[in-house]
Image 1 (tube, helix red, strand yellow):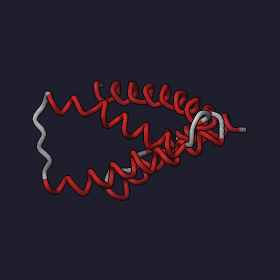
Image 2 (image 1 turned 180 degrees about the horizontal axis):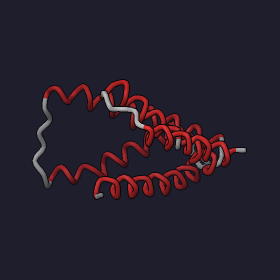
Image 3 (image 1 turned 45 degrees about the horizontal axis):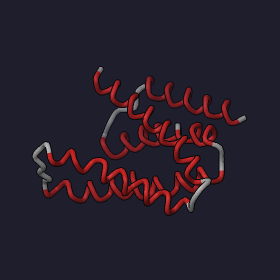
Image 4 (image 1 turned 90 degrees about the vertical axis):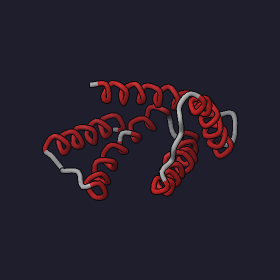
Length: 134
């Protein structure tokens, strides 16, 4: 249950960040905001490295690069530009789509199993997003 709790708390942080980012993109170029967001996040995480040993296996370097580019650079730029064009509440509804993509990609690339629970959850999320947007 700890893993689930941490994920829910991370989503609370994302929601608060989205509201803050929406205010930010009204004050500056979304590309600059995305860069600042990513840089500040990296600086905020840096002290953690002082308190724990860091070992990066060679085979992890490529995965770190891909995840960093996709989850920080690409996500930040697309998200900040998107927020500059639509409301935060509409952005939140569209943000739910990542879960459907994550399930599909986990099945395709990690060999995870598609279960009825996942299908039902994805359908409920899609319907919920449509209800919010209509």
